[in-house]
Amino acid sequence: MQEGQKTPHTGVARFMAACRREQPDMTPVWFMRQAGRCLAEYREMRRKYDILYMAKNPELATEVTLMPIKTLGVDAAVLYADIMLPLEGMGISLEIQPEVGPIIHNPVRSLKDVEALRVIKAEESVPYVLDALRLVRRELDGKQAVIGFSGAPFTLACYMIEGKPSRDYGLAKSLMYGQPEIWDALMNKLSDVVADYLVAQVRAGAQVVQLFDSWVGAVSPSVYRRAILPYTRRIFETVKAQTDVPTIHFGTGTAALLEAMTEAGGDVISVDWRVDLDDAWKRIGYDHGIQGNLDPTLLLADWSAVEAGVKDILRRAENRPGHIFNLGHGVLAQTEPDRLRRLVDTVHEMSRR
Image (tube, rainbow, N blue to C red; front, side, top):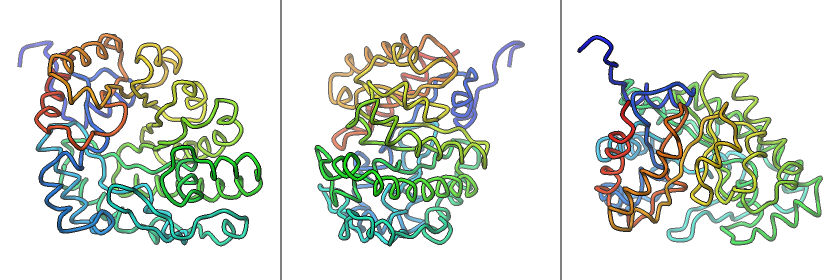
């Protein structure tokens, strides 16, 4: 190697450098839902097992988690799990119906319902998740970063109150607005469970953790600050106090909430395609990293359109340290894996330093 030439980073070094706003050798890439329906090997496994069975089997979860590493060449592996898993330990009866999503058999809609919820340690509630993380960390052997995650209290509360996926979250939001004492009791319990869950994942091997607040775009900034931010902030503060890993804060439809979400916490703020990356970074502040933000549907278009989208995002990032390339949300099921592999290679080549 010639004098002055940089030593190539491994995926884990590249990813961790970006999380800490250091300059990696090239922009790291991973995708939400990268271990999922777009991969033929995964679809084959799903013909044999349901989602919860796979997520609760550490060997199967590890196998799925590692699929996109060899297939797509991403810089990080995100654990194959579901945001609903910790709720079972709280006493929630649920199933995940194909093409529908989580179904809650005992929705939480009264103070009595909230009081009945248990707050127990992750080691007791979801030991299989922690076992899977240990296996993944061992299998990757320091080559790619390991990402753990949890659903955020607001998103989990929406599922628990509605009892199923919703478009308008009418039951959940009406309870939040009209019965604040019940809302506070529920969010406090969820905050305790989520914070402990993330810390336990770090202790089991996660090198970065992401908090998914998938449905938080359903509220205004003032409502967010009043009814959501305090609980989310407590989670990030707990993780920071008890671990030394970077954190990512994710939501969709959050163009109006970026400043408030940044106040709530997270070393890296994940943005979707509804806001331009450079404008978002200015609002978030350059003392934070940023993740995103290619529209997932762009991968269904001609490659020239994908390439133009990649160039635009990298141009807006301006080679600043702290950018993690990702989609604005999860990989669509109809996406060709070869497209994702080509996207990873293109981002790496275009951003090589």
